[in-house]
Image: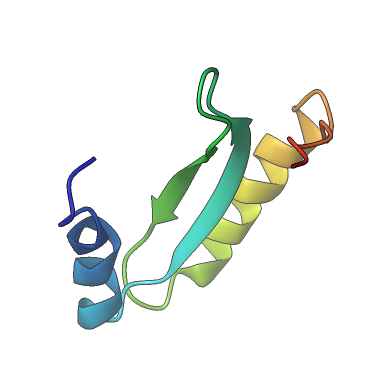
Length: 68
């Protein structure tokens, strides 16, 4: 993996844009958490939260994660 991956979310945080993280499960081989980050314009937190609620209501539900 790239050690500079933090830049993707760090840019939005530095600019003050609201972001909501949606977990999508675990990767197939390595059992690492995967997800989607929603980002909106300033003062539009409600949009990312509403879209996250939409994803949650249309998902197949929580799947138990990999335990060591």
